[in-house]
Length: 177
Image (cartoon, rainbow, N blue to C red; front, side, top):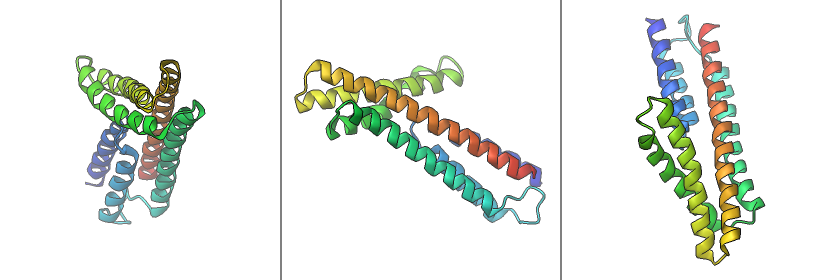
């Protein structure tokens, strides 16, 4: 029975990890799922996970959030973007990620994820450009800031997703040991 619970945990972790690509806090869902697992699986079980592993997951999730925030913020601020452009870039990113999920559907799994990631970047670009135009900036400046928002969002998502994969690997190792 312990193997079944461990298998179900890994399935939940993979689903949470994929949600990270959509802008959902998947890494924190991974932490929450592992905490629930630790609370309900007895420590004497052969597939038990200890609190040290949970602490490692919390550290990795925190680093992922910081990387995503810093990458996006540095991209926009380095390009001279405004708060308005940054907020609209974030909203555009979320909308683009959701739209990309459905546009990529014809290609199973990979299409949806790639669509979500790429259109999240396009949404960040569009939001930043609209925000900067609304603020009264010229088109060239707005496009330059939008470009920075696109790459910041893309880099942040890749870094956070990579840390999510490391979190899953950490959990699998904890289940095996």
